[in-house]
Length: 268
Ligand SMILES: [Zn+2]
Image 1 (cartoon, rainbow, N blue to C red):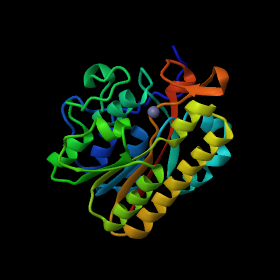
Image 2: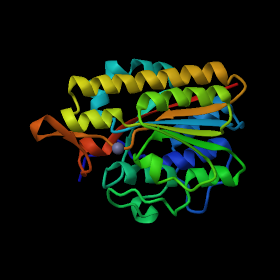
Image 3: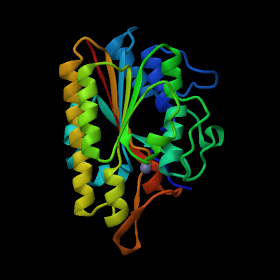
Protein backbone atom coordinates (compact mmCIF):
# COMPACT_ATOMS: atom_id res chain seq x y z
CA UNK A 1 0.00 0.00 0.00
CA UNK A 2 1.22 3.46 -0.83
CA UNK A 3 2.00 5.90 1.92
CA UNK A 4 -0.58 8.61 1.46
CA UNK A 5 -0.04 12.33 1.82
CA UNK A 6 -3.69 13.33 1.99
CA UNK A 7 -6.92 11.92 3.36
CA UNK A 8 -8.89 13.87 0.75
CA UNK A 9 -9.59 12.05 -2.50
CA UNK A 10 -9.86 13.57 -5.98
CA UNK A 11 -13.45 12.22 -5.97
CA UNK A 12 -14.29 15.15 -3.64
CA UNK A 13 -14.16 17.61 -6.56
CA UNK A 14 -17.77 16.96 -7.64
CA UNK A 15 -19.35 17.46 -4.18
CA UNK A 16 -17.15 20.52 -3.61
CA UNK A 17 -18.20 22.19 -6.86
CA UNK A 18 -21.90 21.46 -6.26
CA UNK A 19 -21.76 22.74 -2.70
CA UNK A 20 -20.11 26.01 -3.76
CA UNK A 21 -22.54 26.47 -6.65
CA UNK A 22 -25.56 25.73 -4.47
CA UNK A 23 -26.62 22.76 -6.59
CA UNK A 24 -28.26 19.90 -4.75
CA UNK A 25 -26.02 16.86 -4.25
CA UNK A 26 -27.33 13.42 -5.13
CA UNK A 27 -27.93 10.93 -2.34
CA UNK A 28 -24.69 9.46 -1.07
CA UNK A 29 -22.56 12.34 -2.38
CA UNK A 30 -21.31 14.06 0.76
CA UNK A 31 -17.53 14.08 0.41
CA UNK A 32 -16.89 17.77 -0.26
CA UNK A 33 -13.37 19.06 0.45
CA UNK A 34 -13.44 20.67 3.94
CA UNK A 35 -10.57 23.03 3.10
CA UNK A 36 -12.37 24.45 0.07
CA UNK A 37 -15.63 24.62 2.06
CA UNK A 38 -13.85 26.68 4.72
CA UNK A 39 -12.38 28.98 2.07
CA UNK A 40 -15.84 29.46 0.53
CA UNK A 41 -17.29 30.31 3.93
CA UNK A 42 -14.55 32.87 4.49
CA UNK A 43 -14.66 34.48 1.04
CA UNK A 44 -18.33 34.14 0.08
CA UNK A 45 -20.19 33.91 3.38
CA UNK A 46 -23.56 32.51 2.40
CA UNK A 47 -23.22 33.43 -1.29
CA UNK A 48 -22.77 30.86 -4.02
CA UNK A 49 -20.43 30.64 -7.00
CA UNK A 50 -22.06 31.12 -10.41
CA UNK A 51 -19.09 30.05 -12.53
CA UNK A 52 -16.75 27.05 -12.22
CA UNK A 53 -13.60 26.40 -14.23
CA UNK A 54 -11.63 23.19 -13.64
CA UNK A 55 -8.30 22.85 -15.39
CA UNK A 56 -7.12 19.23 -15.64
CA UNK A 57 -3.42 18.88 -16.46
CA UNK A 58 -2.66 15.16 -16.68
CA UNK A 59 -0.23 13.34 -14.31
CA UNK A 60 1.10 16.18 -12.13
CA UNK A 61 2.44 14.22 -9.16
CA UNK A 62 2.86 15.63 -5.66
CA UNK A 63 6.54 14.60 -5.70
CA UNK A 64 7.11 16.55 -8.91
CA UNK A 65 5.62 19.61 -7.19
CA UNK A 66 7.81 19.02 -4.12
CA UNK A 67 10.98 18.58 -6.15
CA UNK A 68 10.29 21.43 -8.61
CA UNK A 69 8.26 23.83 -6.47
CA UNK A 70 9.85 26.85 -8.18
CA UNK A 71 8.04 25.89 -11.37
CA UNK A 72 4.68 26.38 -9.62
CA UNK A 73 5.09 30.00 -8.48
CA UNK A 74 2.50 31.31 -10.97
CA UNK A 75 -0.04 28.70 -9.84
CA UNK A 76 0.44 29.78 -6.23
CA UNK A 77 0.10 33.45 -7.10
CA UNK A 78 -3.28 33.02 -8.77
CA UNK A 79 -4.78 30.47 -6.33
CA UNK A 80 -5.88 30.73 -2.71
CA UNK A 81 -4.05 27.54 -1.71
CA UNK A 82 -2.65 24.21 -2.87
CA UNK A 83 -2.99 20.86 -1.16
CA UNK A 84 -2.01 17.24 -1.63
CA UNK A 85 -4.83 15.02 -2.83
CA UNK A 86 -5.25 11.28 -3.08
CA UNK A 87 -5.90 9.62 -6.45
CA UNK A 88 -7.84 6.37 -6.97
CA UNK A 89 -6.77 2.88 -8.05
CA UNK A 90 -5.88 1.94 -10.66
CA UNK A 91 -4.25 5.35 -11.08
CA UNK A 92 -4.92 5.69 -14.81
CA UNK A 93 -6.62 8.59 -16.56
CA UNK A 94 -10.18 7.38 -17.35
CA UNK A 95 -10.58 5.77 -13.91
CA UNK A 96 -9.40 8.93 -12.12
CA UNK A 97 -11.38 11.50 -14.11
CA UNK A 98 -14.46 9.30 -13.83
CA UNK A 99 -14.05 9.45 -10.02
CA UNK A 100 -13.37 13.20 -10.03
CA UNK A 101 -16.54 13.95 -12.01
CA UNK A 102 -18.92 11.29 -10.67
CA UNK A 103 -17.87 11.86 -7.05
CA UNK A 104 -17.59 8.13 -6.40
CA UNK A 105 -14.94 5.41 -6.43
CA UNK A 106 -14.25 3.10 -9.41
CA UNK A 107 -16.30 0.22 -7.96
CA UNK A 108 -19.35 2.48 -8.11
CA UNK A 109 -18.85 4.34 -11.42
CA UNK A 110 -17.67 1.18 -13.16
CA UNK A 111 -14.50 2.26 -15.02
CA UNK A 112 -11.96 0.04 -13.26
CA UNK A 113 -9.22 -0.25 -15.87
CA UNK A 114 -7.83 1.69 -18.82
CA UNK A 115 -10.94 1.90 -20.99
CA UNK A 116 -13.04 4.85 -22.13
CA UNK A 117 -16.73 3.92 -22.29
CA UNK A 118 -19.36 6.65 -22.06
CA UNK A 119 -20.27 6.79 -18.35
CA UNK A 120 -23.82 5.76 -17.52
CA UNK A 121 -23.34 6.92 -13.92
CA UNK A 122 -24.45 10.48 -13.13
CA UNK A 123 -21.69 13.04 -13.46
CA UNK A 124 -21.12 16.66 -12.49
CA UNK A 125 -22.32 17.58 -15.98
CA UNK A 126 -25.65 15.83 -15.39
CA UNK A 127 -26.04 17.66 -12.07
CA UNK A 128 -25.37 21.04 -13.68
CA UNK A 129 -27.66 20.31 -16.65
CA UNK A 130 -30.46 19.16 -14.29
CA UNK A 131 -30.09 22.49 -12.48
CA UNK A 132 -30.62 24.31 -15.78
CA UNK A 133 -26.97 25.23 -16.24
CA UNK A 134 -24.65 25.11 -19.22
CA UNK A 135 -21.46 23.05 -19.41
CA UNK A 136 -18.53 22.76 -21.80
CA UNK A 137 -15.58 20.41 -22.10
CA UNK A 138 -12.50 21.61 -24.01
CA UNK A 139 -10.08 18.77 -24.67
CA UNK A 140 -7.95 16.84 -27.15
CA UNK A 141 -9.31 14.04 -29.33
CA UNK A 142 -9.30 10.43 -28.10
CA UNK A 143 -8.39 11.45 -24.55
CA UNK A 144 -10.46 10.18 -21.62
CA UNK A 145 -12.21 13.46 -20.83
CA UNK A 146 -13.20 13.78 -24.51
CA UNK A 147 -14.88 10.36 -24.47
CA UNK A 148 -16.28 9.19 -21.14
CA UNK A 149 -18.55 12.24 -20.61
CA UNK A 150 -20.11 12.26 -24.11
CA UNK A 151 -23.87 12.05 -24.82
CA UNK A 152 -24.87 14.88 -22.48
CA UNK A 153 -26.76 18.05 -23.44
CA UNK A 154 -23.67 20.20 -23.38
CA UNK A 155 -20.94 21.49 -25.69
CA UNK A 156 -17.77 19.54 -26.48
CA UNK A 157 -14.85 21.38 -28.06
CA UNK A 158 -12.42 18.67 -29.13
CA UNK A 159 -9.18 19.53 -30.94
CA UNK A 160 -5.98 17.88 -32.12
CA UNK A 161 -3.58 20.03 -30.12
CA UNK A 162 -3.20 21.51 -26.64
CA UNK A 163 -2.62 24.93 -28.24
CA UNK A 164 -6.05 24.83 -29.90
CA UNK A 165 -7.67 23.61 -26.69
CA UNK A 166 -6.19 26.42 -24.64
CA UNK A 167 -7.02 29.12 -27.20
CA UNK A 168 -10.65 27.90 -27.26
CA UNK A 169 -10.84 27.79 -23.47
CA UNK A 170 -9.78 31.44 -23.21
CA UNK A 171 -12.26 32.34 -25.97
CA UNK A 172 -15.26 30.73 -24.25
CA UNK A 173 -14.37 32.39 -20.95
CA UNK A 174 -14.45 35.72 -22.77
CA UNK A 175 -17.82 34.83 -24.33
CA UNK A 176 -19.18 33.97 -20.88
CA UNK A 177 -21.69 31.35 -22.06
CA UNK A 178 -21.04 28.50 -19.62
CA UNK A 179 -21.58 27.89 -15.91
CA UNK A 180 -19.10 25.01 -15.83
CA UNK A 181 -15.99 24.74 -18.03
CA UNK A 182 -13.64 21.72 -17.86
CA UNK A 183 -10.33 21.95 -19.72
CA UNK A 184 -7.92 19.07 -20.29
CA UNK A 185 -4.19 19.23 -21.12
CA UNK A 186 -2.42 15.90 -21.59
CA UNK A 187 0.97 17.20 -22.71
CA UNK A 188 2.93 16.58 -19.48
CA UNK A 189 1.58 13.02 -19.34
CA UNK A 190 2.55 12.43 -22.97
CA UNK A 191 6.11 13.70 -22.64
CA UNK A 192 6.51 12.02 -19.25
CA UNK A 193 5.63 8.60 -20.72
CA UNK A 194 8.12 9.04 -23.57
CA UNK A 195 11.04 10.76 -21.83
CA UNK A 196 10.52 10.31 -18.06
CA UNK A 197 8.92 12.62 -15.48
CA UNK A 198 12.01 14.80 -15.02
CA UNK A 199 13.23 15.08 -18.62
CA UNK A 200 13.65 18.61 -19.94
CA UNK A 201 10.81 18.05 -22.45
CA UNK A 202 8.50 16.94 -19.62
CA UNK A 203 9.39 19.81 -17.31
CA UNK A 204 8.82 22.23 -20.20
CA UNK A 205 5.32 20.77 -20.66
CA UNK A 206 4.71 21.12 -16.92
CA UNK A 207 5.80 24.76 -17.04
CA UNK A 208 3.40 25.20 -19.94
CA UNK A 209 0.56 23.77 -17.83
CA UNK A 210 1.29 26.13 -14.94
CA UNK A 211 1.60 29.11 -17.30
CA UNK A 212 -1.73 28.29 -18.93
CA UNK A 213 -3.49 27.92 -15.58
CA UNK A 214 -2.20 31.37 -14.61
CA UNK A 215 -3.35 32.78 -17.95
CA UNK A 216 -6.77 31.19 -17.45
CA UNK A 217 -7.00 32.79 -14.03
CA UNK A 218 -6.10 36.22 -15.46
CA UNK A 219 -8.77 35.77 -18.13
CA UNK A 220 -11.35 34.92 -15.44
CA UNK A 221 -10.25 37.92 -13.42
CA UNK A 222 -10.56 40.34 -16.35
CA UNK A 223 -13.67 38.95 -18.11
CA UNK A 224 -15.80 37.72 -15.19
CA UNK A 225 -15.80 40.72 -12.88
CA UNK A 226 -19.51 40.24 -12.20
CA UNK A 227 -19.25 36.56 -11.20
CA UNK A 228 -18.22 34.59 -8.14
CA UNK A 229 -15.91 31.96 -9.59
CA UNK A 230 -14.48 28.70 -8.28
CA UNK A 231 -11.42 27.69 -10.27
CA UNK A 232 -8.97 24.86 -9.79
CA UNK A 233 -5.91 23.02 -11.12
CA UNK A 234 -6.76 19.33 -10.71
CA UNK A 235 -4.52 16.57 -12.05
CA UNK A 236 -5.82 13.00 -12.06
CA UNK A 237 -2.86 10.88 -10.84
CA UNK A 238 0.89 11.14 -10.47
CA UNK A 239 3.74 9.34 -12.23
CA UNK A 240 7.02 7.54 -11.69
CA UNK A 241 10.14 6.81 -13.70
CA UNK A 242 10.61 3.36 -15.20
CA UNK A 243 13.42 1.69 -17.20
CA UNK A 244 14.84 3.21 -20.38
CA UNK A 245 14.18 6.73 -19.11
CA UNK A 246 10.42 6.46 -19.61
CA UNK A 247 7.58 7.29 -17.26
CA UNK A 248 4.48 5.43 -16.11
CA UNK A 249 1.60 5.38 -13.61
CA UNK A 250 -1.28 3.13 -12.62
CA UNK A 251 0.17 1.53 -9.49
CA UNK A 252 -0.66 1.77 -5.81
CA UNK A 253 2.55 3.68 -5.00
CA UNK A 254 3.24 7.09 -3.48
CA UNK A 255 4.47 8.60 -6.75
CA UNK A 256 1.29 7.64 -8.61
CA UNK A 257 -1.32 8.13 -5.86
CA UNK A 258 -0.37 11.54 -4.43
CA UNK A 259 -1.13 14.58 -6.57
CA UNK A 260 -1.17 18.33 -6.02
CA UNK A 261 -4.30 20.45 -6.51
CA UNK A 262 -4.63 24.25 -6.49
CA UNK A 263 -7.92 25.94 -5.60
CA UNK A 264 -9.15 29.50 -5.79
CA UNK A 265 -12.31 31.55 -5.37
CA UNK A 266 -12.66 34.88 -7.14
CA UNK A 267 -15.35 37.08 -5.64
CA UNK A 268 -17.38 39.85 -7.28
ZN1 LIG B 1 -3.82 10.75 -16.65
